[in-house]
Image 1 (tube, rainbow, N blue to C red):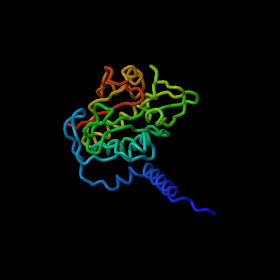
Image 2: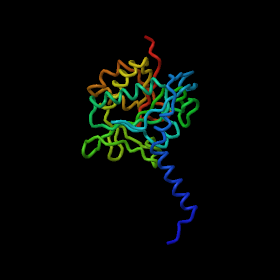
Image 3: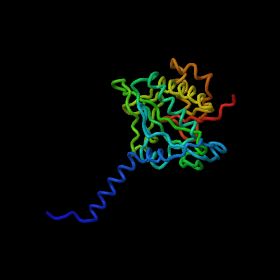
Image 4: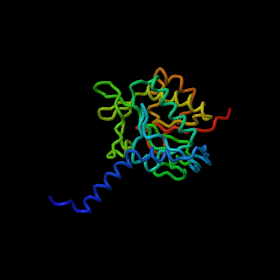
Length: 241
């Protein structure tokens, strides 16, 4: 039997290493992070981040929008924001059982410009992909963060929150925001702004849990520079009290 050419062996090894890096690289880098608290400097639109921390790639009920994006560090935030995000997902295991949530992009480990986003510069901003149900079965489904749809950012939902066979569950968004609000306060933070497509706000506020959010959180009621239909953007700040 002829031996495989050396270059083919090298290619196979490199492919295996690349797959392993994408699969587990983010959590490997997280294991090497220092334990010093983060420091957010400036604003979300003009700022930077010291000692930024990566959000875990996955947990019992959540996953990153992209393992490659996580490997590159596009899921980095202030340490307090990371802790609040993870704690909120823990709360949702009881308040929204059976759901697998997907978080989106957050920012670089050192903050700064984060294209194509106009903000996400100081580690205090997180995108969350909308929770979805199957239109036909009504059951919760995992968010389709396909590379062919710009990791989910390329999906287009209609005025009622429907895209192909998926439908947004606004009650679950409301439960997530409540969990985030409570968790943020545990870590010395507050939610300063939520951005969701304006036409979806009445649908959110009409849900049982969403009804109390209208007066509790600040929502951007004018259209943002891009339509936030496939994700909702949350800005955090340091709690004043």
